[in-house]
Image (cartoon, rainbow, N blue to C red):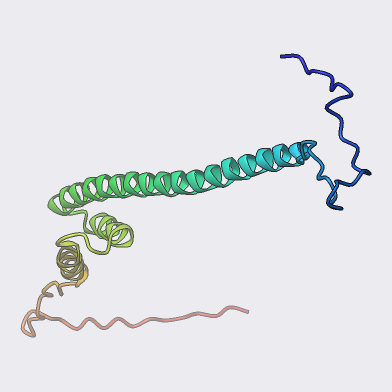
Length: 159
């Protein structure tokens, strides 16, 4: 669409007054600050996208942390179960110190592991029983069979 040039008939002289002494108003279109509005709109859109991205990034990060915690808990559960089974084998084979170390590591990884306190106490008792020395019976001396042997010794010194 082409702009039409105003003809001289359509041009109003603002300096002229009307017959009633009133000023004639300007009929030209008012210029808006179109460039400023466009810049504000672009900046507003940019900040909106930035804020939405930050919020989405935060919630995504939190979700990833939850997934990582769940995986870590699963790995700990698998490792404690494996150590518990190995501890039972060690205990059955008489390796009480090894079983005790395994049970203690389970207790450090997962203090709420079912039955670990009881198994640790059982192994502690078995270790104490195994380490308690039993006195070997010694033969009692029979006074009738005992002979006293006296030997005389002569020591010679030479000069």
